[in-house]
Every structure is written in C-alpha cells, then in structure tokens.
Image (cartoon, rainbow over all chains, first blue to last red):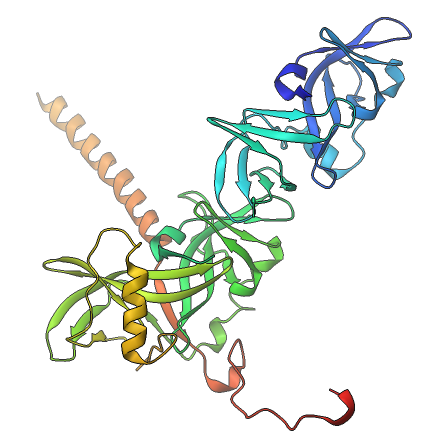
Length: 147
Length: 191
Length: 61
C-alpha cells in the first residue's frame, strides 16, 4: 500500500542509464478502474511528461524506476490534456458523493503499488474506504455513496 | 430513504454533472405542480454574483440526486434553455415565498417564508409551508386542502401549527394532517 | 476642512454605488418557490386523464 503524499515529489530514474528523468508532479486516477493509471513528470524539457503506472519497474523508498526514459509520452486523450493542465489535481479536490453530499477536501489517497487500485480516500478527520469512483472533474471527485 | 428539508436549503445549491464532475450552475427557483404537490424542476442561474441570473431550466427527470451540498444531474444536457422548456406552456404561476396567509375565518396569519420538501433521491414533494406570523414561525403540513392563489394561501383555522425548531418531529404532524384530510398526498388547489 | 468633506462625500457615494449594486445583483439572482400549472392540452408531465384502454389480446401492445 502506498500513498499519494509519499509519491508526490519522488525522483523517477531510468534503469538503462541511471539518470533522473524527472520527479512526480501529480497522479492520474481513472474512475472506471478505480486506479492510479499514470503520473506526470516535472523537470523534463520536452512535452513527454506522462508515465503510465504500468511502466514503473520498481517503487522504492527513494526513487521510482522505469526501464528507460523512452516510456515517457505526451497526453493522448482529452482527460490526459485536462490532467496535465492541472484540472484534475487530487490534493484539496472536493470529494462529493453521487447523492450530493460533500465528504471534505482530499488530503491523501492510498492505493496498491502494483495494480494502482485505490483503497482509501483521506479528507480532514476522515478516512473513506473506497466504494467506487463515479467521476473526476474540475469541480469534484465524485464517489459512490456507501449505500 | 426520504428526508425532510426546507426549500431554501436546496436553493443556491451547486448543480454538478455525474459524468464529468463539472459544476454547471446553481439552483435558483424551485418549481412545483400544485395539483400533485410534486417538484417538477428548477431554474438554473450562473455561479458567482456577476454571472447570469438565468441559464435555463432543469426538469426533475434529469436530476439524479438532491443532497445537502449539491444537486447531481446525469449530464449537462439536462439543463434546457427557457424557450425549449416549460415556460411557453404555463397557464398560471404563483410565487409562494412572500405570499400572504389568511385563515378561513378571515384572519391574516402572516406570510409564507419557506416550503418544506420531502426529498427522495432526485424527486421531491411539497409537504408543508413555513409561515412567519407576529408571534413567530410555524409550519402548516399539507394533507389537508390549502387553497393557493396569487392573492393568498388559505389555511383552515383549526389547522395544526407545527412550531418546534427542527424538522424531526414534523413527520408525525404530516401523518396526522394526512389522516385528517383523508388524502395520501396533499392536493393543492390553485385558484 | 472642506477637502475632508469632499473626500468623505465621495467615499459615501462610492460606498452606496458598490453596495447598492451588489444588493441589486443579489436580488436579481435570488430565487423563489413557484407553483406552476399547465393547461390540459400541453401534456408535459401530466397524468393521463382518459380511462385505460381495453387490454389487448395476445400480448400485443
């Protein structure tokens, strides 16, 4: 289990050349699979800032490892454009249930390192076990209400 | 699964789409059909003091849920422009907030300051009127005939005045009123 | 002395315009609860008033 707060700011290094390719700026969560699916790098000079979570070879305490810097790519979909544009940023995102009740503003997120599957959402004073993500957008992260 | 709330708690709620998690506006007016006491939709205004006072109409069929902090709609296409919507077909409308309240024995009781709604997911029913009188506020439950016109709301002199602070006990008052009036759901006569 | 009065007066006018404007904008946006009646022919969200048709034979709707 790993948290968003642990991953943000971490160095990403390439195994083939041992160089730092960048650091983690933000994570992208997919509401269909309820999983972290990608990260965005900062510190790169070209527009290829997205690294898919499945392209991570290892997640260590001091660095995330990719095979080579060639795994980086640019945004391909509208969601990825919004992602790199900062519209889907998770920290401080309003967490709203699909019943229209606010849970709080997101402070952290826990997910499985290997699969990326999100298990918990943290808001001030509250840890929410995930019952399902409905949508992620500029206004809120909509979660299924525990029914 | 249903809950009681005041119409003013729903008014000014942010309207959020369930597909793209985007805020499309805020609730402005609550519209209801007096013959069935059911909310039929909402008018939508923009977000922010300088935004449009009227963006369009949100029919109740497009509402997924009405919560404490937001009204959830299936998608942004649920908000229709005034022209496509109901306005052209309307025969009569009465703005209820501020309407004078008169007893059937001819005494002025006060004016309507709020409406009590019973909300179940996206659907809501008008179940009471909150009246501001000289002595204070009270709620009159629907379930008995309460004729409403552009001039006034008429309330039977023997109607129960629910005066407690919260709405928790109001459900019992509602059941009693329905029992007396003999109707399951309050039928509002719009004169 | 006169400068103070002029500045005070200007501030008062500006205050009036700003707060008056904000109040008007607020009023323009404020909502109500409205009872709405449709004429019978409109057919929007009104229950059918005719008695139900004779049940069809053999499941044909």
